[in-house]
Image 1 (cartoon, one colour):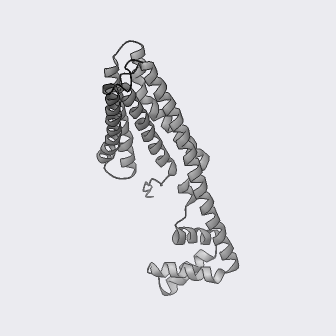
Image 2 (cartoon, rainbow, N blue to C red; image 1 turned 120 degrees about the vertical axis):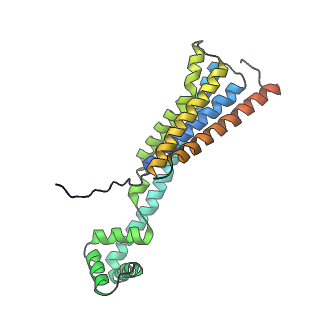
Image 3 (cartoon, one colour; image 1 turned 180 degrees about the vertical axis):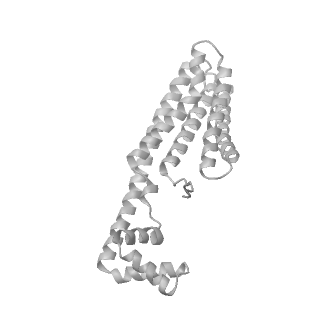
Length: 243
């Protein structure tokens, strides 16, 4: 009988963050456009065009911003790594004292403390990693790869963004009215947002219901704002219906 105990853990990942943010922003962006333009009683063709343009523009902007942000963060962290490597090579006694202070603060004393310090400083890779994590809180794995992060953000934004647009393709086929399309877009967006929010909550070991309601509520709020703006533009005669 195998008595090995394996406790499952989910490592923190920037890609989960990018997936959730990308999908959520995609749904909310398209839903806001669909509800706003649809609320102005514009034709299905214009609603689809506006939403698709907004979806691809938003996906590109989010991907580029994510790439630059992650790239900049990695460059800063890599410079810190090089600085620590230099200090370990040039002033090892000072760095050893820092390791000792770190573990003394954790409650290690006497011979146990000496053994811990000697073990860590006997391997420069372990020494460097310990300094980075304990002193600086640096973890490049969590930051992620800039290009991969950008692609995840781009793809998840498009997946989320296309969902609120789908009912308007059915409108073009003459199967439902624009009013049903808006209601369907909101329902699809709320359900998909709730699902992603619930998954995020489970991954974070928090309430999946709270996570789902939080994400779904934000998307619905944006839709209502967009719909209100579109309807008001029609009432004020600023936009002509059925363009």
